[in-house]
Amino acid sequence: MQNIRERESLQSLIEVLNTRNKELRLLYETSRFFSTTLDINELYDKLFEVLRNIVDMQDMFVARYDEPNRKIKYIYLRSVLEEKSIDVSVIPEIPLAPEGKGILSEAIRKNDTIVINDYQRRLQNSSVKYHVTNKGDLSEQDLGKEYVIETAMIVPIKLNGKILGFITLMSKNKNEFGESNLSWIETVVNQAAIANKNAILYSEVVEDSRQKKNLEWELKKASGEREALRSEAAGRVKENMKTISSLLQFQSDYIKEPVYLEYFKMAKTRAHTLGLIQEKLYSLDSINEVDFESFLNSLIPNLYHEFGVDTNRVSAYVNVKDISLPMDKAVTCSLIINELVSNALLHSFPNKKKGNITIDMHEEEKGKYYLAIRDNGIGVISARGKPHSFSMVLVGMHVKNMGGTFEVDRKNGTKVTIRF
Image 1 (cartoon, helix red, strand yellow):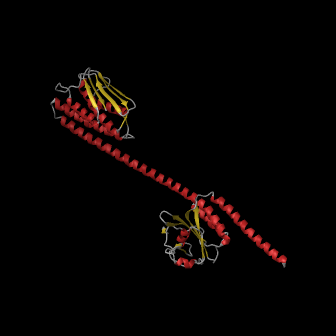
Image 2 (spheres, rainbow, N blue to C red):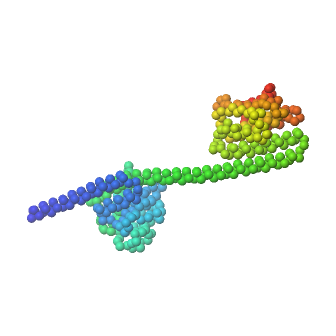
Image 3 (cartoon, rainbow, N blue to C red):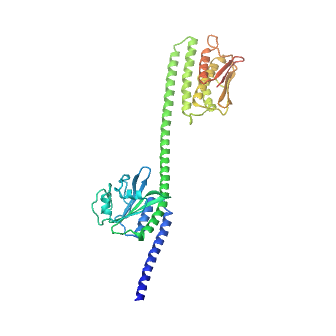
């Protein structure tokens, strides 16, 4: 008789040891798996399989808790009726229920694991209810299924004492959850909590990366649209200036008086140059800083072509190195240079006289510039034999707009010095 009791006692001990050994093996396997996955669905699929090896449960819900907004959001649902998780996107965020009106809300207030052995009665007091149907999907109404949930266990997912959410385990058996498996389940869930946090961080990184790619695409799209608009604007300005230039040319054909003819020709070249300036500026990669030397290398040849002057007769020297100007100053300087070079080409070298025009520009100190345009011709004289004052008025207006000063020296040609 004594031997029988000893054998039974020994058998019970062996069963307990086998159970603990099984639990330890599952904990080890679970820990290894949790350390290798960053996918939340994979994480909870594995947790569902592991827990079913220890307890007879049918459904598992996972909810995330947003503490600042006091909102509960279901993120995972798995049932024995389905081989994969059920879509919970139809479940809206649920506000924390008043005391006594929500099962999860009670667990949040207690900040601890709770076991509910009268689940159906407690469910009646919940303000929001969702049910798994026999088809293995989700419904707001209890449409009946092949089992009825009798017991539930709600385990908080914590990290550093802070509640991240809850895992709800449901069983059709009464008293399925208790002291015999409580600590083991909490241990597994604690492992899941760390993996859950890592998975959340990973998903946030992925989302940030996706948003970054979307933003890059939007910026690229906006850049393309901006380039199209910029090109269209440049084209319209160029065409408008060409139209004005053509009208002035047409009008000048009916003018015989040399003085007025000169005015019309200058107005025509100003309109044409404005069109060229806009076209060149709109074609630049950056409108914040304009490479002025490169810009002048396009502008000056155009003026020689416009006035029919050969560079072998009147040479042009551009001494502008490493000068980048904001768009507004680049435009104003271009208009000044256009005015002075045009007048020099028109008036300083009559009767095929040879000479040269020089443009010097450098930065005297940070943000302060020196610009000089000089020629070695006879000087800028109008058709009436007087200095061509209108161009100087325009130059003075442009210099004033830049907050600068200018001087004119008519010894040995004409030299205009501008500082701004």
